[in-house]
Length: 277
Image 1 (cartoon, rainbow, N blue to C red):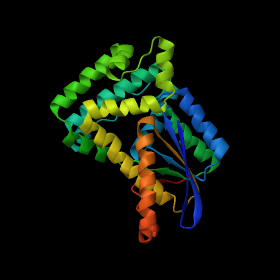
Image 2 (cartoon, rainbow, N blue to C red):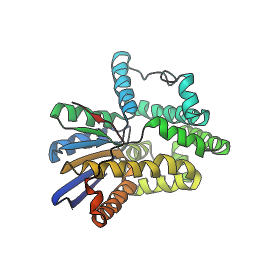
Image 3 (cartoon, one colour):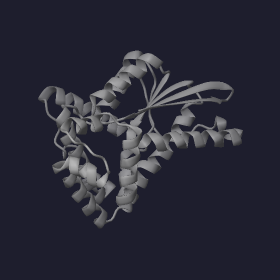
């Protein structure tokens, strides 16, 4: 899934290319490589913060040596649980377990497309920006937003999706996958229709989670992208497919606001860390 935005900012022509990826997909990895090679961006933005990038790198190095993912609890300590809250801790464990389960189906680590974009940028000497909100801050807000009932509902849906993936898609997302190959195609080749259905599903069953994990992070990332566009003309953004539509709309909204208030056009407010290369 690719979006292209062309606009003028501070008297210069700008282009933003957004890739909506599946976090466990050979197709998304190939798409990232192709777009970087074909469009040759002068800056790359990733839906990551510093901690998540370091975890991806560490997991990748560990996997290359042992041929298996790190234990889910390896990075978790009592201080982390206190910081993010028990409900967010439980949510994180369930989410990572589900991602690892899917990853084993394709012999890929979750987030491989992000790591690919990062390494491609390093090899080509392209500046990298980590535009997402800090994960601990996001999880802390999530802990305040979710209820015990929501956690139990999430556990039920997670188990349902893992054991009966095709039934889950049919009954919860209104998506039919008659064969295993069709199911794999849906998981690894995100499209607009599937992305919209996923977001509708999240809003219906897990609205509080959707606001914290999708909507609020889109606001942070859109703001960072616009600020980065002050300095770069050809920007590539790699984000999860669930963020693509909302993020694109927010960028367009922020651009309209920038035109209305030129006083803010020179104000830089990066909330994410720049990665030196």
